[in-house]
Length: 160
Image (cartoon, rainbow, N blue to C red; front, side, top):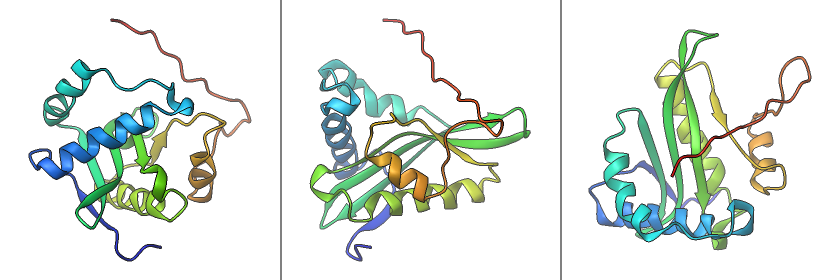
């Protein structure tokens, strides 16, 4: 594990933090595994103000030498089957030059600590089957599919 990397809750009013979030999310969005398109300028302009309005948002950063090298954007939801909160990792991105060096695991550990502290019944995430990060998630204890062996699909109906 990289000892020089620190994990903290993001301060969305801190320029280093919000610029780092935008940079990493845009870097990831531009990669083929995430669609290969940068985030539109108008979306980037709205993103941080909108994240500030999300009372259920939990945002974590990996920082090294005053640079954001990893980010986890999470939202607290609710499991009706367990009658408890659950955290969904909506985005987890590590700078491409720092992947495979334990930063993603450090971010996952921070999310797990937060989830346990909130009394959550678990953590969820979505990952494409060809995404290299899938191996990290599996090592960390995430499993695809359902207990009966069936596979759930992530479906979306998009507007605008």
